Length: 396
Image (cartoon, rainbow, N blue to C red; front, side, top):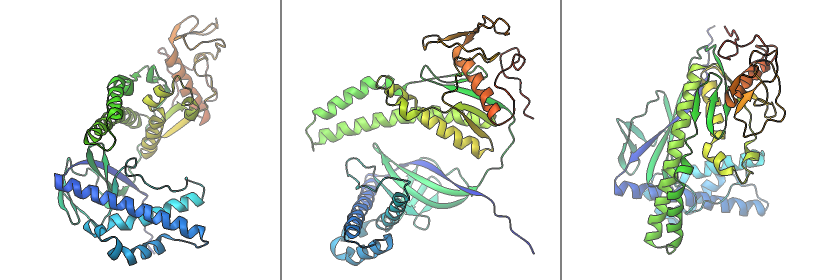
């Protein structure tokens, strides 16, 4: 009897910018508005029935909506049926997650604050070379073709600032993991986004700080415009474009950094920061948000695990900056302004040797990460480093 081995599969999304005509952009706006209206209608009915002691479900609400749809909401037929069908399924999943304690209670979607979007099932669209076919609309130009090969499971069209995007979900087998024996430690911060134990440094570009003057001027212009006027809408779109540009520049740096690390290293040690606590610091909250350290850790973890590696999170209370990576001597009264580490242990190979503070911290994080997974017995030792200060650990 033959047994088929089930291969692990994952779903990846490819987000592509669309180039719709003016008429196609109007269709997208109608479809997104229909999806938002159906969600709000279903949520209101759900709350009303639940308060009345009934047990609403997504299927019952969808059936109820279809009974009155042609008479009361005939305009919903002008766009793809997914725009009015999918919100019921999404609302059902949202309430399921809420009752299980995994999410907040579903909320109504605002026309001004929510992001316009609608879903397309895999049998409701077709893909061509640099184009996508949408029901009741036709072919829409895409900036590039899908670069993933696999089974198409669905797509979602969204609007960010002035541009429309399609995110195409593709089911594909997990990549074959390649053993990468190299290990590295990373110290993240605000002066430098990341300092590697190899000595490499990645500067914090601070895109929000750079564009803050333009952003303030645009926001000031927005709030001086009359509510509901065309000039206010123009000002709002300018603010949205600025925010989108800042996000895109930041994401580009984070993706390039994390992809490079995931491709080269199998074990990555990084500090487990209390990001929520850091954002409560009124002085540094904007800088921490601008650096996006949480997204850096999330992207790094996902990409490393996809390639068969592992990210080891070192405890946030581990004194990586105050400890000498060569002997373990601790500089107890070290201040934030001290950017150079000087070991005071006369028996250490780095006695009175000027070490860059963040590099020393990265080496300590690497040593602690290796200790946590049992590859070395202690964090630091006098003979555990090579001439350049790197931990000499054989991972083969």
